[in-house]
Amino acid sequence: MDTTDARSPSRAAPEVTALYAEHALGLVRLAVLLVGDRASAEDVVQDAFLGLYRRWDRLPDTSAPLAYVRVSVLNGCRTALRRRSRSRLATVFSEQPAESAEELALLSEEQRAVACALRRLPERQREALVLRYYLDLSEAEIAAAMGISRAPSSPPRPARSPRYDATSRRDHDQGRRTRP
Image (cartoon, rainbow, N blue to C red; front, side, top):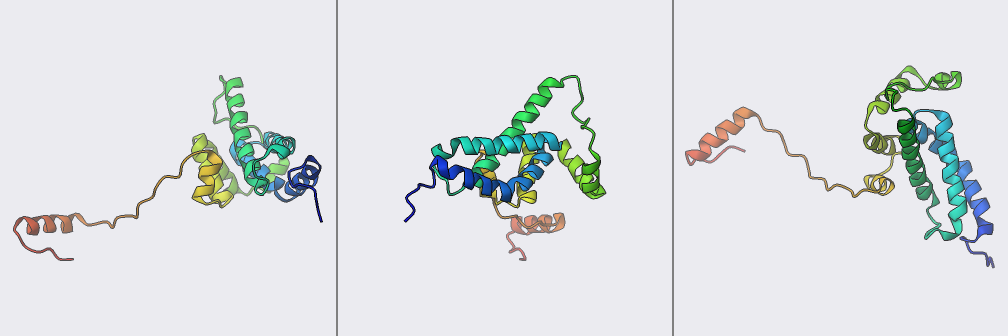
């Protein structure tokens, strides 16, 4: 019988190592989309995993460490962008760091266009889009990761032509029954 608790520090190293091996690359890609350069993205992800390791024994629920790391990566990206904007007040935000030859080889022209369009979006919109379409998270997971409440949705209303509306209004005013 295994008497070691899943939250014990001795279990943190193998658990965090396995999580890192499985998800680090995807989290780096997520961070690259948010911060715009690979070096900063790798630093953010490393810091998130280090934070997970340090806090392993204090986590309320060790059954979902990926969600914890994902939120840590998002917060780290926000911090990196805040620091970058503070240190570069004179620099226009649209100027992006030069891409390395490796990054250029990895991204197709279409991917670069999408990445460029993402960089022009406000930070929170960019986060929501990346979480939804890059990580394929549900609305509830996105809301949890971003620390916001999920907006209620209403079903779309069918569009009516102006002519139909005018005819319906006239018939109604004259006491006639309208056509469906």
